[in-house]
Length: 545
Image (cartoon, rainbow, N blue to C red; front, side):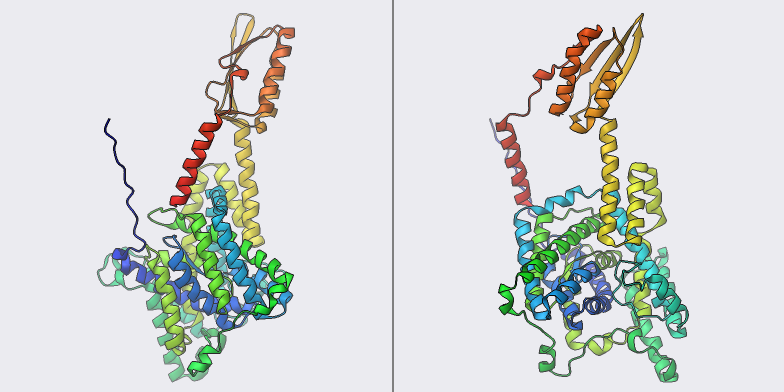
């Protein structure tokens, strides 16, 4: 008999056929990343330049080793709390860098232990709720920037922060510090971004190749430059602009780097801090790649275990040269996707531009107004939380819509990870309810004085179904005929089987005729050889990923 030889086409690591879109995506995400890297470092209690280092490592190092098509890594607001706490506990930033290196090694270990499998248990409704929640927060938190209040540069995903200074306080301060130039730049920027979404601009041979965000940034710099020339007292300055550290010499640039304190190897708090960083960064990364995969127009799937290894390498390198922890960042990734990115070349461009511009063009970057960048983030937030997404989830049913809405509300009222945990619990409730309802199907009909009941068990009958089956069997009237069909069941829990056996023993006393289309005693788990063969097949699939 002839054997058919099958071959697997190896996918290319990099696809340069989409370079134009990747260039736009990497460039736009770079512009947004600069102030966010600085703001997150500031909020984390770390040197400002450590945020830039993390951004460069996230783009170049993680981008090189990651197998995610569209995810872009860097410092992320969800890591602010764990970073701040670790620096305070360890007492020095160099000791914290050692903990970051160890966190990277832990993440690499988690990747080899196949821990990424937990990403398969994130319900799509919760992931979509996370994206929409982030989108709404982005919209709300850009409003102060649009009117010229730029104190909150970290863009932490929490509207109501524990120290009491929340978004409501920011609104009050912002309304008392309106800046006409910032409002003008924001209004024109939003107009351009919305105009670029119109069919004419999308289809025009010239305009479709020019990123709207780049036009917005150039416009913001130009307007503020004109104002600085004509009316210096009105020009935006200070925290209204990007504030990147500027080195005047090579030695000054090298002094911006900090290195780990290797003498802290014996400090047990270094290891506890490393574990905290690794767990939070890994969870954030898995959530982010799930979200990025959903935003991917080509619907590609990122190998979760490979991503954990890439993130671990990134954190090891970041800690080694003075950067704060990195993880996959949803905001940066979605900005890049919206600008046209289609492969991970965009992440490499993102990191390269950060490196080159920090070295060669820091003074140019420091002229970008926050109002222009806030406009880009506001439109990104709108795209993550479109009304259409709410309608789609509502049409899919309450079991999808309720976890989606609860996830959004919990993220808005608490923080990102807490909101996701609450959404997961609500989604689990609906899964359990569905399992309870669909464990069996019952048909009842009357033939003379005798009642006939047919019970068809489902494919997977877990212990969660025991209560409903006990209730059903208890309600069977005397003298009835009960037919139990388990011929389509691939698994029946032992508790459920015991319940059916107990009913069989009492049925005769009540003159109930019991008919089995498949005897409970005939049910057997899969043979060990079959289970072993299946497990080997699953391992082979994971190794190929």
